[in-house]
Every structure is written in C-alpha cells, then in structure tokens.
Image (tube, rainbow, N blue to C red; front, side, top):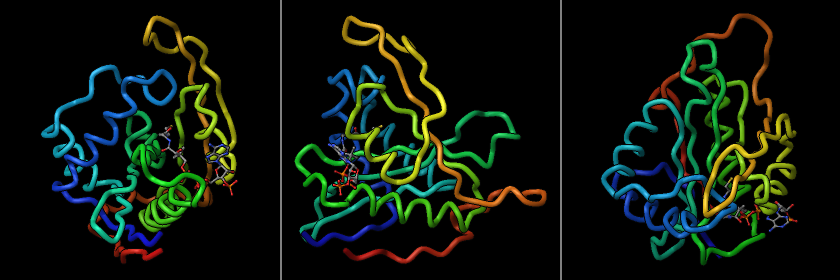
Length: 188
Ligand SMILES: CC(C)(COP(=O)(O)OP(=O)(O)OC[C@H]1O[C@@H](n2cnc3c(N)ncnc32)[C@H](O)[C@@H]1OP(=O)(O)O)[C@@H](O)C(=O)NCCC(=O)NCCS
C-alpha cells in the first residue's frame, strides 16, 4: 500500500476524532472515557503544531491511515526537552506493515531537529501491540504504575517507556518551534 506522511492540518480533525473514537470504548488503549468533539481536536492540532510534530499517514485516496503527535510530558520548565508520544492507526488500517514505525521515524527526526532529548510512551499495561512496537523502536520500560486509572469497572495500570533521541552534553538551548524546522513529506 502506498501512503504519504505529512504534517496534519486543522482539516484532519474529523478523521482524528473518528479514529480515536473507535478506541475510547476499549479498556486497553486509552484512559479517555468520553471522546472530545471535533472542534476540540481542531484546537489540539493547531496548538500541538506550535511546539511538536502532528503527522498523518494518508493513502492515495486521501484516507487517513493513522496519526502521531507530541505533547508535554510535565508542565514545569525543566521538563521541556521531553516529549510524550501518541501513535494511533485507524481501526481498518493494515497492521504489521510498518506504518506506525514509519510515522515514528518521521516524528523523531523532526523532534531531533527541534532539539528535544527524550521521547516517552505512556501505555495501558495490557496493550501488547503497543508495548511490542515501543520495544521494537528501542524504547525501554522505566515505570509500571499499577491501578493508575479506573475505567470500565476496573482499576488499570500504565507503563512508561522512554527513548533518548538527543545528546546530554552541554547546556541545552530551548527547543525550536515546529515552524523553525523544515519538513518534507515522506512517500512510502
Ligand atoms: C500499536 C499500533 C500503533 C502498531 O501499529 P503497526 O503499524 O501495526 O506497527 P508496525 O507495523 O510499525 O510494527 C513494528 C513492530 O512492532 C511490533 N508489533 C506491532 N504490532 C504488534 C502486535 N500486534 N503484536 C506483536 N508485535 C507487534 C513488531 O515487532 C513489529 O515488527 P514486525 O511486524 O516486523 O514483527 C497499532 O496496532 C494501533 O494503532 N493500535 C491501536 C491504537 C493503539 O494501541 N495505539 C497505541 C496507544 S499507546
């Protein structure tokens, strides 16, 4: 299957809303209980693109196969070189074809240019596919928080996984804005 990876625009909000909405009713993908509305996703895309990549993989017919974006790990200033990574494929997008890995590669490449140092994954501890994906990309588990959330009648745990993407030598400059970094679409 041919697809293109490009920066998201606010017009992708409906697709992102619908894709995420398919996983909200499940117990092993997300702790979100109520899917936000399309306008909230539109704002999320706009706000994210100021500081972090928000990428989509799109097939030849313009259908969104999946998306990925970054968000702050913690709000305090000294955490600013860390990025929390979200990756989601559409429920009917082909699996084990490398789409998530390709999205990660583009995502991490941009983060490196911006000057970020660590990427974190925060996963429901029963999400075997996601745990395997993170491991295959070189992430290491650094924390297992049992009973971190309550959803669908049970307490559920999360795993934190991390991958270093930048050097720790010297004093870090403030990460660049996304607009200060050039990105060219990737064709697969
Ligand atoms: C998790 C998810 C993003 C993986 O996407 P994908 O495009 O199928 O992943 P890739 O093809 O890039 O997989 C790369 C490697 O990860 C591992 N992996 C991915 N899915 C796996 C699975 N279901 N079982 C075992 N290993 C898996 C494998 O090592 C795989 O390499 P291989 O196929 O050569 O063995 C996708 O299944 C998905 O969107 N799931 C629903 C949403 C979700 O859980 N998102 C993550 C929230 S934390």
